[in-house]
Amino acid sequence: MVITNSWKTQQSLTKKLLPYVLYSIFPLALLHFYLYPFPPLPGSPAKDQFSIPTILSPFTSQNKELKIGNGLLDSPSLPPEEKENGNENGNLHEEIASLPTKEKESENGVLPEGKGSEEISSTCDYANGEWVQEKKGPLYNGSSCGTIKDGQNCMSHGRPDMDYLYWRWKPRQCDLPRFDPRSFLQIFEGKHIAFVGDSMARNQLESLLCMLGSLSPPNLVFTSGDDNKFRRWHIPSHNVVVSVYWSPFLVKGIEKTSDGNQDYNKLFFDSIDERWGSDLDTIDMVVLSIGHWYLHPAIYHDGDVKLGCHALDTMNCTDVPFFDVYGKAFNTTLKAIIQRKLGSEGKGIDVVVTTFSPHHFEGEWDKLGACPRTKPFMEEEKSLEGMDAQMREVQVEEVEKAKILLNADKNVLPKVRLAAVDVTKLALLRPDGHPGPYMYFNPFADGIKERVQNDCVHWCLPGPIDTWNEIMLDVMTRWHTSSMK
Image 1 (cartoon, rainbow, N blue to C red):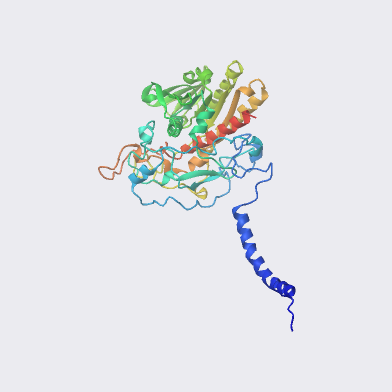
Image 2: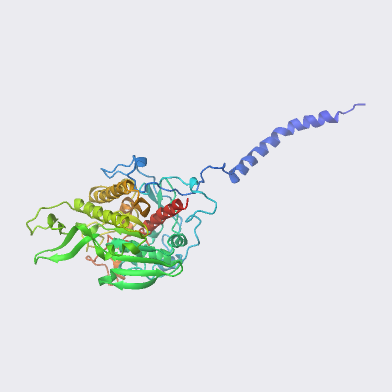
């Protein structure tokens, strides 16, 4: 009789099956850890958190890789991601109808409860990045926002392509959250925001009003001046006041004086323009945006002293490079704001300088195809150089000088916060975002014309300039978070 040892048989079977069991468990374990990774250790940085900049200008000791003399801001970027909206040849009106008019509350606009500022990176260089395609459309469209200036309402005027609406700016060092109107209104509840400058300041203001209006529509409460150059809105849900002041030089100036042969501007660099300066005590944040008017013919004064002129061949005067007086305007303006806050016992002020936004004319302003681009430039296609680079450099240098002045006086430091929102490079790369001939309604209704007025300076709304306000909100959120520590 043969007696079978069951234990040995079972053990032998186990040895045979064990490798197959292990082979089957191992890929399942990998799949589990891929889908459900370990939680971060206490104190480790959150992957999706945004960062707090200590100095918002790229010209800092922490960003020495940025070269400012030759317009080479960073290395060439990779091509944009593939477009995901899948509607390249779709109907224009269907695409407009599908654009959102309200956005859900953002999870990135304000820090969640319990999240400390120690979890946020200390710097972000907004200028160092690339435009990438995104399937999400803007917060508003040409018909849902009632504050768009007619000349920038490209959708309603019949612009046939829609691709320019599906790009977002992606900084390389941090995440730039999508604009959250609720976060903005919470930060500025009960406060007054003023945009001061030329038509680019107005362009940025109207973009902000449209984005805020997707949550809480603003009410126009004051208007004055030709072309509504001085206006004020009130957002009752959060008691926020938003104003625009026409001041294309920031300093005192007389526009378009004529000597019979040539029109020119008169500028006085010893004082700021009191049309906005006299309201500084009522303003909680001022956004300064100028540039293009400094390219026009002008005579420059400093008090009673005549400094010289620019582009005035009909007059016997010393030609002064407008870069010098452009910097002098910011120097006078920032010093005046700081000195007035130093001498007052009132509230402080946040000061934002939006850097120069280049134009994209390719040929004559009234010729068909003056700004024909329908896609952003790749970084290797366009360098920041020449006049655009110099205008930007002057602004950022004056902001840094003002920061030194602030740091030297501990009495004024708590009263003034200052930042350069550097948009020059990212604006340079968006030649597709201008109204072009669609500054007027249906410009080709009577057929294609060889001569048609083009706008290759201002930006369509919605459009790339919405990013200016996304960056500004990110700056404000970080300041707000820092002040609550």
